[in-house]
Length: 187
Picture 1: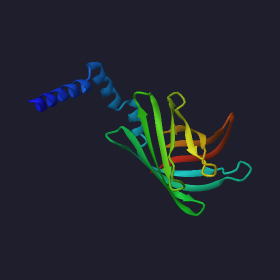
Picture 2: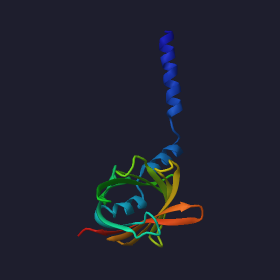
Picture 3: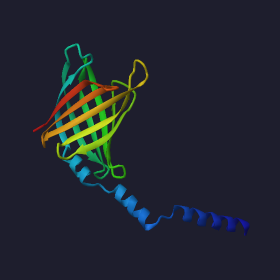
Picture 4: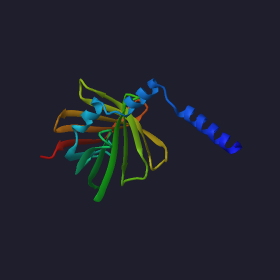
């Protein structure tokens, strides 16, 4: 009888602690439901040609290369997954990104991984619908020092079939442009 009472008591406590008010349930529903920002991300689905320019040292000429990117919404339109392929310094290059619009934060979250390292770059920011520009900031690791570097990404959507990606290393009040990619949708 004692065991039965303890089991019933535990079930009541567990049920009470996990039950949600109607307001809480609505908040979760809003959090999990794709919005207009998710629909906008879905317009980028498809294959893209990438013209890449990188600056390793601003006093030196840039390194130019080409690549391809495939973007696809996943998990019922909640996240944008991208595969990036190309070549860097004569070596094959592969990267993946995941972009989310967090309904609770009202911000975009972006992660990046690639074959040039073992770390994860994490950024967050906003989209300006008037200028059609996404501004993200975050950190990536400097493999030489092991310290975090502040980075900024600016993505300007010039048309349904073209956008420009710019990446900057941020050191205090100084920004060094490290990369520019012009994306054109494959026809």
